[in-house]
Length: 395
Image (tube, rainbow, N blue to C red; front, top):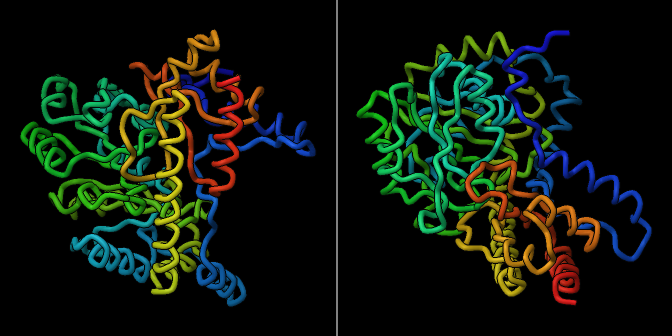
């Protein structure tokens, strides 16, 4: 059977490959005194709040399960618009919001609408691997631009300008970022967008972790900068609705009809039940609970990052959002006689029973020296993981 070239260009998602190995080991040691602690997948341990669950139940019981319009229900689009105004002080008209089947569908639609065969899209190295694969699936090419800790592992206007070539279509950024948990300084983001706009390019930004910002200096939406910035967002992270597969896209008004046509043909609509349930995310009771959970994520970060540093797994930039730790494991590899983060992650899994993600998923520039920890776990699990790693690394 002949496989399409576009499919062959998509690399394995190594996060999930490691997850399979971790799950297999977990079954073997489930009944021992050292079950596997999963710090490898970026999924909140919290689930949807009670009001959201109850709204979903009512929707099903009342038979409100037919298709919605491709752009999403008017009520949900209005609710998202209101959240931008209340949380970030940004006016985003509901007519520019497209509700999608997760942030993945949002990015897929944006790439299909804007990227032609041969177009190049600049992205920071490291960055979330699926983002570059969406570019590839749209017949474009992701160009990874190396970044450093001094740059918070984010692109700068100077680097965008230097990397811009004849085939460059624009930039795809993430703030806060997976895997680093770092955000772009709003002033620098404005400069990046000025460089892009001056060249007739597009600025796409993944803001799915924006609700989980821990620093007011960074916790601002790029939509405050310009109406022609395209933002991808999700109900998965801050709103704790991962398996509900619901996200949204904010586009300039000129793109709404284009994205709607694509969505009608590719997805019909996002899950009706998920859309109805998500309305309850914006109830005061739910928002108060989300803020309590955000504070808990910050407390976990404040414990876990210093603990990793004390073990020699240095986190060069304190994450200002999300729930990740991007740790340099070179010193530990040298001590243990391991080659790189791939070997380190597998050794941590089998010897300490702690599942983490090696850096190879996230780029090529120095990522072999880094591992990603997810801190979307209870404080007790994080403390236990540190104790196991300490016992392993400091015999």
